Image (cartoon, rainbow, N blue to C red; front, top):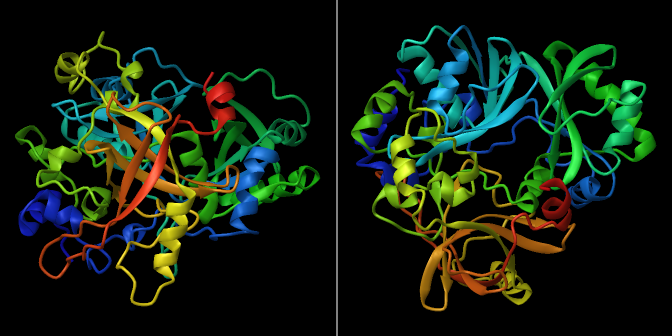
Length: 470
């Protein structure tokens, strides 16, 4: 089957909103890793119980298998560092081997395309991992902009792996929690030394030499390790065996993203690639069966213009990463916006009675046609989620990714709100689905349930705000 470009799909659907509001589950051209819309393929949904796994990174130590679900790009050559610096709001000119940093990219108008993590592996060699939007943007510039680089795409694992051979350069595991340090020291046969946050080191696990990144999640200290894919079982088994002493819990797909909500990580906004003449060449280059053509825009917030779903780095608290001392795509637009009011990222703690009422609706035959609440997470798909959010009679932003956390015994949502909203305010989430789409790919709308919620800090977890983020 011939793969259509994203631009071709947009024209076929009659525009970005129609394309993104449509369901994608029967797209014949979908690559195996994008059908259906799950983002945690291959690994089990639970190893023990998801609530028990959730508590482990707060109370003990957790092992996350990150080998499968993220897309990656390996970038190598004399111009690799310059390419990254030219497309990122943060300056890579000072990057050096052994250090990782976040990469944030915007379009020419200053709207977010996406973010990810870049690992500076060797002098002219980098890898970038994340949801795929930034990885595709890097590949485009590596192939079309005249840089002296070689770019190799590392495709994430398929949702349905049977009959689809798939290997990756590396396996990748993350060890997190208050007992992570003790486990890491045991694996290493002694202290690892003083490794600064987002700096890399090396160690031996299961007889295999691996690289490691000082990292953290949900406020818990930890390490991300990666090594040869063909030795993934030996590395994983060695971590599990050493972890028995510390009550190590393996974390499955159901619990995986709970930590992201606790940490205040806004998974992603709609990538700003669907409009604008400056982005047309990219849309014509980009295969429509990658993430940009497969995601679904969901939630009760309905706009006619896709631009109304775009956000800037300032809205997601990435303004502190911008370095205006170098030229990059979108620099002038962000420079003109830096004094404008921006949204702020907060956590919404759901009202217990309203949450219980939503479950009552779900259990009432002939009740209202509400959108059901999935536990523990509503962010386990490729959906970009936008629910209405009201403070009194005022529209104050949008609610997004939602999860139940056993650590807080609360349902939490990440939200972007305007500057008038204060911590402690009570807002109302419009919980539901606006519906939409095109042709026979229509998604039906639902009734809208009103959920009261208290505006709280992001990150919500105290340890994440006061220790990890410090």
